[in-house]
Length: 292
View 1 (cartoon, rainbow, N blue to C red):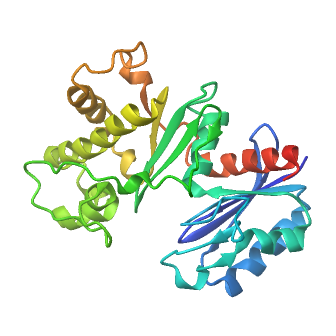
View 2: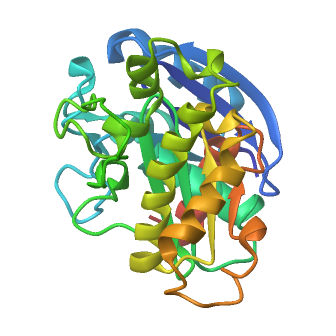
């Protein structure tokens, strides 16, 4: 079966084809312009590839509720040209095949759960820390939704006592994303994180915020593993600091065999930045199997 995968991001659209094993066969990348500019390129790619099912992991907010009249739409995105755009409908109309649909970070969570660091587990979380912060939740063997989809990058957290920065989220200022995403690091320190590798205080503060979030997710969602990815997480010093701070903040409250083995509880992403594309393959397979 030839499967299409679309990782629809705010700056680029990654179009790929793959197999049920998760193997990626072909990939093309298009800049994210307006729908009028970008959709014809993507439609042509998947038509040429003759895909039998398509999975889309999309920037949001989106409407993933199949019972909703706006299912398959990109909704209140700050990318104005894509607001209220029926992306699923556009692909269904042209490709005449099943189309699975979810957020880009949920697709990444599904990729890690199906093929990567959380394979074999029924409950896991994937958190991306980059230009923004997003969290995909895989719970009891399926992606977690609700009234829409988790927006766990915008949880409210305690400020680090030595952090004078006010936060850069346009909605909440000092939520998790406002304090710990890549742009906040650059605005706090005057340089991007990639140029701050040797600055101990930078990563102590960053680890404090990410560890807090991980504690909250562990308390509420009880994942068997937390997988961390995204550009900020490429700093080698950060993962050990997060584990250390997580243990300190947890203060012995939860006692399980998984938390006793922190190196296998909070882990780095395993799919080399392909987790969302591979998750889209799984979205397509699930959609084709269910007939929806």
